[in-house]
Image (cartoon, one colour):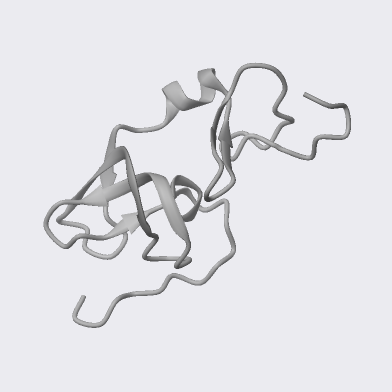
Length: 101
């Protein structure tokens, strides 16, 4: 890590130094301790009856910001994929609700 590295943890907002998890595609960085505080499941903001599950898998388009995401919350029922920062409110991008949702 370099002193001028601007990366911050997307969950706690503090500087990322040393060991951390990172998604190069979407720029998601998280401390190991913060990743343990991420909920494994959460309720969908689009359909409260649906459960979102944290997933790390092949890149797909985020429903909110339309960029590729590897670390994501995924709804099995409606196929919604959201970056953790898009779901947890650390991104100011407006929520893009797919047609038919």
